Image 1 (cartoon, helix red, strand yellow):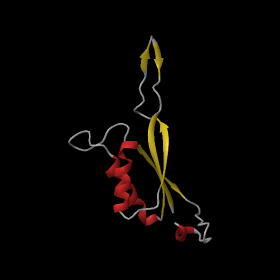
Image 2: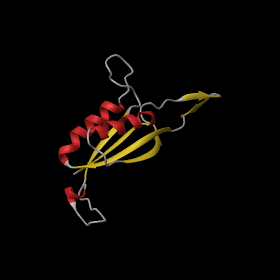
Image 3: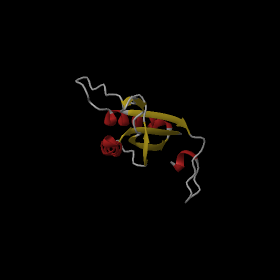
Length: 118
């Protein structure tokens, strides 16, 4: 079992969600978050260096069984990557995907555990 956490542009959220549903991955959690990574730049304001405000992003969390990891990650990448050039290589700020191992999962309603609970 894995927990896939993706942080993507808010503008790509609907496209990613629709692509996941099309790939038959329907159990997701979405949060609004703020942050910055490489797209951070330093601006000069009145002679002072200023780090710009945090950028709004969307965070998806998806618990999947091992056989669904690749399809989930590939679907997110295809839907979230901006096509800033002819090659479709994306651009700075498209986001990140983290994959963590889940030790256990428990469905509260039925007390099911492990892969069955996902």
